[in-house]
Image (cartoon, rainbow, N blue to C red; front, side, top):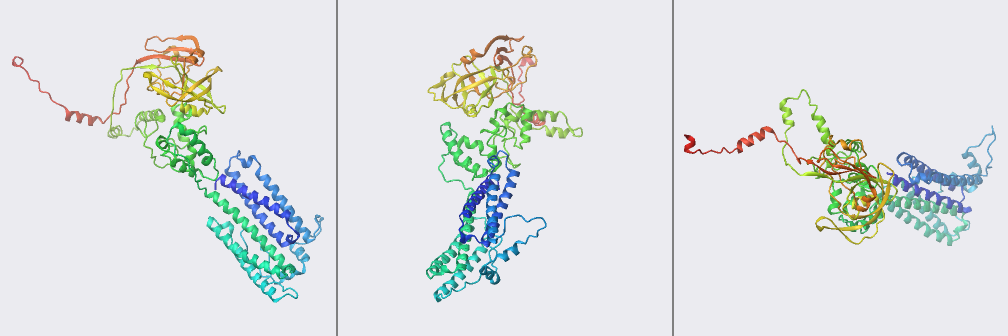
Amino acid sequence: MDTDSMFINQTELYETLTKFLTNIKKDGSERRTIDNYKRKADMLEVYWREYQENHRKMCEFAELDHVYFKKGCFDTVEEVYSNIKEIIDKTIKQLLGVSPRRPEAGEAQPSPDIRTKQQLSVSQRRLEAGATQPQPGPAFVNDVTPQRDDFLPSAGGSSKLDELMKKQNLNFKAFLRTVSKTQVDKFENQWQFENALRSLDSRWREIDKLHWEIEGENGSEDINYQEQFCEHEETYIELTETINTKMWSVKHRERSAPQMDIPVFHGTYDHWVSFKDLFSEAIDKNPSISNAQKIQFLKSKVAGEAERLIHHLQISSDNYKSITCALCNTEHALWRCPTFLEMTPLQKSKKIEQLNFCQNCLCNHFKKPCISVKRCRKCLGKHNTLLHDALVDQSTTTSAKPNAKQTNSEATKENTFRSSHVSWDDRSEILLATAVVKVTGSDGTQHTMRALVDQGSQLSLINENAAQILGLKRAHFKGQIYGAGEKENSSKGMIEIALQSTHSKFSFATNVIIINNLIKRLPNNTFTKPSSWDHIQGINLADQKFNVSRPVDLLLGADVYSKIMLGGILRGDKDEQPIAQQTQLGWLLVGSMKPYYHCNVVLNNTEELLKFWENEDINQKIEMSNDDHE
């Protein structure tokens, strides 16, 4: 049972005890009997024991910030329990005629059984002497009041009344038998509760129907009969209330997803807001639905690109939690988390290992085979692209320390691969001015984002993913965004963002337009930081990882450029080295680099390559002229 189910159960027990207290205060004199209140005391203890057991489990499994602990639910219920117990004890003492004073030291105190027998009325003593002990009642009743087998015929009563009394006596016996077989605590399914209710209702209808016939024959003069009828009536009412309460609790625990028309989400932003609101209110915030059912419902309501993002997740409670970020607990996946993206390759690898996440899909599928068909975009390996650098570093370190006992043939086999692709690109890499900034979200949290500073842009832009992370209120923006080649890009609205430098307290605000796709990853490929760039040593770069190919979240236009620019410029010794421009955000690197190789190389077995060239070699016969022969 999870904490939500236990909290629901605790709430139901609290409501039951509150109703218990209200009813016991309303009890008339005809219901204030010793046996009746003893039975109430037993019921109270059973309820309290169940509440205490659930409280122990809540303390063990629930978080301390759970509403159960914040509102002090246990103290409230304990007070209700104490009030009921005080009323029951006080009433029993009054019925027994015992003074509420405490016995003095050395004073012998008679046992409850002796006091009870001393105070029994004549009719009760007669019932005790000739009673037949029925079978134990429902699971929450430890002691069923002894009932007599038949009623005393009324003095001077008619034979019809005696006959009705005998029938009612048989009805009471049948009712007690049904009660004894109603073990509420052992019921698990709804049909068991419904069957028990039908049986009780059937028995009680016969008793109630005959009761009014007895009343018509002046049966109200028989005090013993009236006491028994009232006790059975109270047993019937309390037992049916208990069954109904637990039956509705079982319905909640079954947690069937509500029948509602939530539209299928295909991954377009136009439908995202309505889908998110409906799913959040109807499914995500519904405590009666388990996390496993939530992810099952979610997977049935997404299609297209949205479905491809989560299709590999198996239906489990932990995987539903993994849809929210495991690092910052916000509504984005781990691979979109700014905190995770800013980690070094080694830190990313260690964090994935700590979370027991799959290296390929970055989710937890409990050591079962990963069914995701996606592969690393850099080497096509079975790991996530974000972990490529870390895994390559690990494999390089491992290969640098070979086993001394390994034979040359084994080493050859281990270094055999199946495919190759080599290309050379003589284009120069152009470094664009990127900066890492802090952007404040709707809840005041500062998110680290990467920005491209472009003095040639008339507008500042932000991509859709970054806008969703910030969660700021959007303003309507009419217009189309045009880039190179007059390519049109539809706007998704406008937000005002507050930015701060990562090196100082400098901050500013600007309006940014939201678009789906901003720019490709910068730089085009990851490269090693050149050690020969002496002019950037010892300065605070706006983007310390300028050499790592990463996504860009923001584009800051000319209006921002004019606010952040300072006077300093640093140049390298060679033309192929970029310049550094001083800004309020740090030093921006801009300019070209020397030509570089753009290679994806996987070596094949050398022997196979030799055989290939031997088989495919074309021996070209050179024809010589007669003069050459001579």
